[in-house]
Length: 456
Ligand SMILES: C[S@@+](CC[C@H](N)C(=O)[O-])C[C@H]1O[C@@H](n2cnc3c(N)ncnc32)[C@H](O)[C@@H]1O
Image (cartoon, rainbow, N blue to C red; front, side):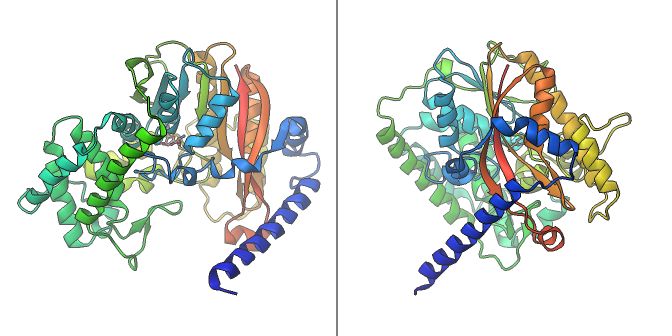
């Protein structure tokens, strides 16, 4: 048996073992008898179903072949086909107004635009806001336009003055070889001199090569440093990106021959905080939300995207930290403010259970409380701004700390119900494994990634 075939057989075996475990877990409770969480599971049982074919579309993997969305790897994004699917399920048309309150890459708005539906997106992370508002502009590019700009930049890189970057941020001091750092800074200052829209388009391409030109990889809770990594040369990497864009322009024309984008369907994008939507200028009350919030999984977006932030959006470490403490409190440095309490009895139960265990990080309970307090504000705001009858599809991951499972999908659904939403269904898109530490100590328990569907 060749290596590829062997790998496939092993994968299939592992998958079927995992499915067996899932069935076992579904039939035996993972919560203490009579616990709030167990009651929550039985309350929503009839509205919960599996649709495991959605598993690739709830992650960025599904975007790998999609023109333009493949350019910048926003690994927390869901895929074009996910948005397309839910627009169809919700019967969306050009009278709708689609909203992604955690816009990230801008997948929701990009897809809505292709299907002629007006949309709006908000993100609190400057780089996500920037990508969300720049990606739609790629659809207006003509063939060879980007290549010509790149051909004019390339010969001037050597003599250009290196741009200032936030070098006091520790990761910046170790992320690049000296040679690549200098080349990238020189390239950045030439991009800064371009006029619009080329400046933003090239900034987007520039951000999309930073990871491959560095010793880092976005593959966990943080930006991991991998000294042994094979790094790309910035000029070669950007040339490849330019070629990809040119290919995507042709591909797009082939896929959507008559596509015209008018002003009405060009997305509105805001740098904002979805916990407080009072300053957002909606054209009208949104009728659909398709989104995914940060998960309560300790991931810190300001670390994962720190290279992009340090090259363009912040001047120094202080400014980076200000962003860190301004986003939704889903990361481990999140602090609970005076008077804040778990906003749901299941959260209270988890916090109480964790207080009896030895945690590998004592800040976990605070992060959990802060996360749900923030999500309560988010849900309240959505209820306030959405049109009556509006539909919500939100992808969310459950989490498990020290053996304590948190059914985030159900807790948020019950919080939404209390505010006035109708919880229509909870669709399980996939099951994830656990960290090796958790498995060793508490056994392997599948953790749901679900799509909660609510109606205003
Ligand atoms: C899971 S990602 C969303 C991905 C997006 N659906 C896509 O397809 O690209 C969550 C996003 O929430 C953003 N975020 C964090 N705190 C926020 C806040 N308070 N208001 C708005 N967005 C926030 C993060 O920057 C991140 O881009």
